[in-house]
Image (tube, rainbow, N blue to C red):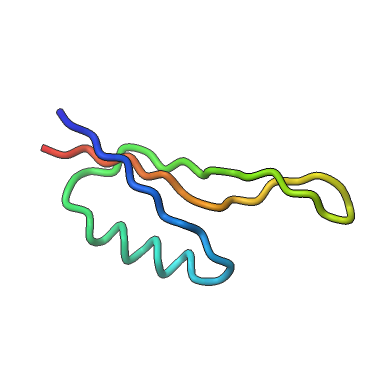
Length: 60
């Protein structure tokens, strides 16, 4: 078994279409999807925003 890890950058509004298009183009099985959060500081305090999504694909 071989695995591939893909990274999809998250924009403000286009993530749904971008992720759907990317997932439909994969040839193998999707094993996991991990959000990559980046800490940010807002006027209300510290928080985190997702800047990319990591996708693990099982390839034959």
